[in-house]
Length: 388
Length: 249
Image (cartoon, rainbow over all chains, first blue to last red; front, top):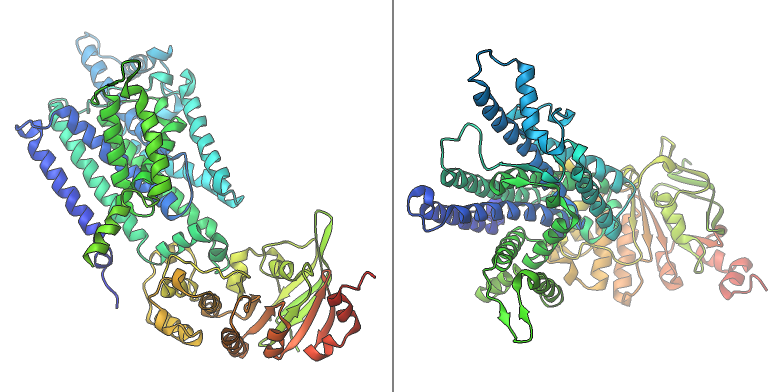
């Protein structure tokens, strides 16, 4: 009667197998392995895409399974990026400062070193003082802890307030938008302590690994992202496999019924909201060292809306659907906006895809919603049905 | 005799409209009771109060041997006290199987962590089989609830209540939209359930109430106007006036 978790969820095995093959192929063809069929910058793009797939899984869990249309999950993604970025920037600047000061006859004091680092980092916003939130920036371990703790706590507090007041549906979506907008606006300020609109940069240089080429570093991050995506997929598939999955889907389909079965619906929503926020933070912490820079624009409301579009196009309510949606749309998007798509010349008007891509994306979103509510992932249903 | 549920002096006002007006009503353990009354009599509001969905402006709702007030408890806590509720429209989880629907309802710890670590216990499996037997869905355990007929969905929802092992079941119009055969079966299920717990049925349909053959309480404008056997209350002049709409004449 009791079958193992993987036997009940064959799609998880398929997913892990595909991901493993994909990772192996990219690794073999990468510059770091000497073949170089896949350029380092493309390895970075692929690695970043895997991180986007991971946050798409989180979005699918919170929206596709639990029915909470959060339009603010990129805030958690950004916080994860900032948390790791602070350490990356601090540690690297410290190294540079120490090197430049080492030539002096009198060894610098700790205060002098700290001042010099502060000057380097906060010079752009006219400051040299370390804000309080940088207190742990010198410790990789503590900043890694921040990657999960800060998004988790923010989600916990926000979710507790919102769910306890029984805010649901579109009102909750607006609240989450407001949350990510408020955070972005705050970070845009120069005195926010995170360098205002300059954001954190130079994140692709990993302190302590300066001797390694970018090709090797990017491959390492690509592999780590693939691993995180695989782990995230298995984790959420497991969470949603048993009775928890029943209750969570029940909340999506009929919240009142779940409540009158004796379940404290708010606790479940909070659990899902917070867990997905933490996973989003982890995804962000892996993404931004590959992107090299993070600034407040990254957590503008539009980012979280794109996230919802990816999941809708990929197919809500199935984890691999979210992955397909995120990968397909973000890769196609960078092809169009990166000038990869040829312009269409009508003579009287030239369609430049850098401008028109958003229109195309909008149309595909409407088309998917109208004609394929199950998204791209729904195609697998047709495939399976044909076999049986 | 000690009462299972005592509602006394309860009043609720919605935007100036008195939905429940100084209502007092008691239920004994393991009794079958029908509540009838015209539209707007406050039947559903009464259920909302008992299940914690609506907080009354005044009055007391006292539950069980320990005389707990239900007014301070949340909806889920009230369910865990042993009060189950069936909605008017069949509300089952249509995307999930009958077994999953019942498994969610089976009495077990309801916290997120307990549910996450939940292992299918043999006791629970047996309970699910027993309930499925009682509601006549033994052969449909693996079916998706959305594919069930209207009547079967109603039974499944009653089954979900039974699986909770409640001490009081509030059942809102269980026979609505059912064929005569289905009504027959629903009556049996409810009568059987009333042997172990109190079952309160809110119903419009007099013929169905007659089948239940139990004590009847008539509500009108948020208060009890008559109580007793069906023949007794239907002979009552106030009840006749209310049902024929002459109360304000």
